Length: 97
Image (cartoon, rainbow, N blue to C red; front, side):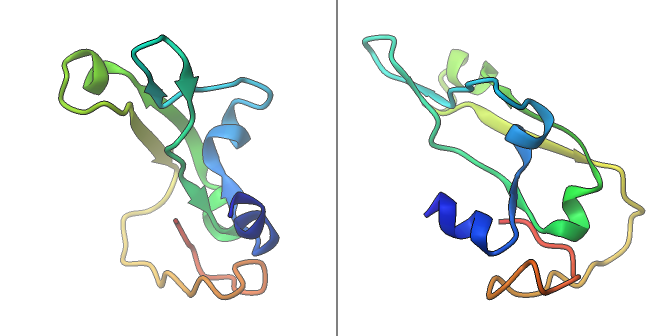
């Protein structure tokens, strides 16, 4: 699935901002961590990514068993055409998935 998103031109925003760092968005009772939660951006938005981070307070406070994932973009506030998921690499419209 993740390879398919990459093949369609979508970028994993956490990996973009923290290359080579293994993040976990869910921690099991045994302490094993897994990365289940992702944000992907199409080419038009990927170049605007300022930060993408996991916030574990949602797990620590037991609001969820998953960490929250944040994304900060350096973009002007306006309504954006989000394009389609068919082929993000060929579509210049901003896209998040």
